[in-house]
Image (cartoon, rainbow, N blue to C red; front, side, top):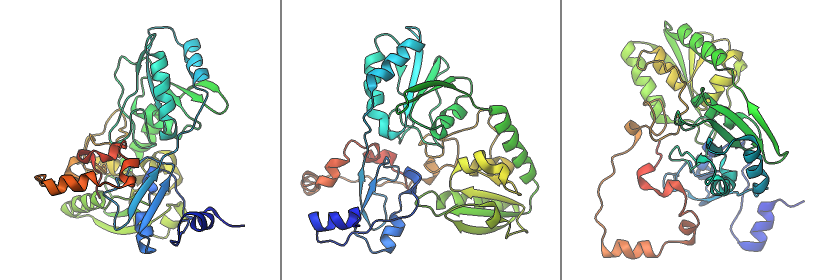
Length: 354
């Protein structure tokens, strides 16, 4: 049976086409490095937002194909009307696949409710990630998540512990109140930080699954450990499992620069503390412990250099005077640029670099 790449190659192009079979958990797993290693000239990433801007991929031209899942928006709107009194202040959030439905619901509800579709740049309005969610205004009565599963919803719940949270599953059409054990999470993370505070040998893990790992964050952690006279080892891993880390018994504490939720959700499964970069900064007395756990890993306006898009990691951009020739080049933009012109990563002031 022929795969989609073979069929596409025969029908549309004579170029060699390869389907990359590595795991793609989300927008952070764009694997332009592997595409370049394979000698690819062009890469198509299907289904996620452009967390890695097209001008930041290395040696490979990039096309993001966004997915817009159509749902029964009228049922979603009716469900909200049934469960909330007119005048209630609601925040609507979702994953990128449902943001158009979210905007449609916003338009339908705005006359009777105080509806906001919050944005945490560089994400699209209403879009949240498992590690990145906006802080909501205290006046918001409830946050409504449109989507299946809880992973992304838990992100906005962690970021807003005092706001009631609800989930509407567009597939089952079930509407439910959702809860999160903030006390248990903060207790476990606090214990991990305390256990790491006196460690002399640290392990730094750079995630290699797509673009999960940030070399800039790794370098920042290394400089801090060097300043404190702490020993450390570097480890590059695409997936982080307890048995792998047990092979390094001399390491007293691990810091993983990959996915913060790995530590938050599964940190207790590891025999040694497994910290996020934020937690490591607290343990190394570089940052204060926040009573509300920050979900700002990819946010442009983040709390510190333990996040990907913090201002300290952004390059200084030289001012370029536009000439007539550069304007002409702009007018000759390719169709590829046109396809992504509405993408938030096209705002050059919001570019993510590593």
